[in-house]
Image (cartoon, rainbow, N blue to C red):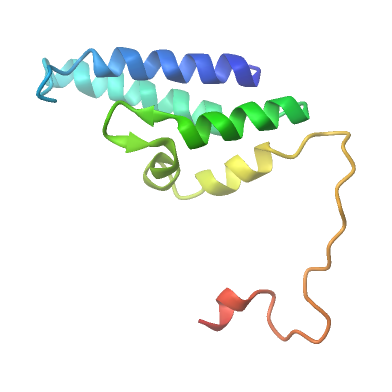
Length: 121
């Protein structure tokens, strides 16, 4: 599945999920809401995991993640935290485009005793 298809699939799943709630946000049917919610979650995970094949894919993926929401309830950034422990890592790995030379960076700054300042906290 390419990035555009993954975005479209997730967006469509959000629309279907939102249709299972009334104007006050109450589920029209608990079973339907659970089913459409699960489908939206699966589509989001597929979007997060879909590999980018070009810089344009990266741009589209980041733009959708930053601008998208799940209805009026949650930003897609919030979903990265709430839908699974490793989704941030999956998302970041999916942004690496095969065939594009990576910039080599040292894992530690010269003279550093820790890989990052966050380890000291």
